[in-house]
Image (cartoon, rainbow, N blue to C red; front, side, top):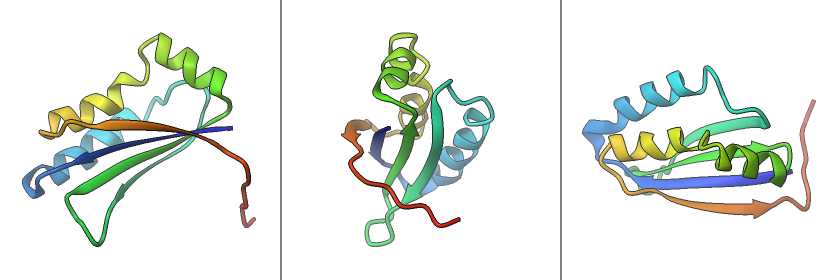
Length: 97
């Protein structure tokens, strides 16, 4: 499992645009995406993140190579932000069923 977090600062007048474009983009997620969340920081409302869980680092790298991950980056750019992406290895997981 592999996690990416794309972060950007978005002006209040672009919040709805970011939400709407995210919703449209995720109607057809790249192969290998397990889940994706669009989150907004409560303490710093202009800070938004897209947290994506991938089946594997290989699935992420394949999507990256095929430029299938550019859509999320573009969402932030379209909302007037310059995003930054971090990648994380997963060492533990808990899911309540």
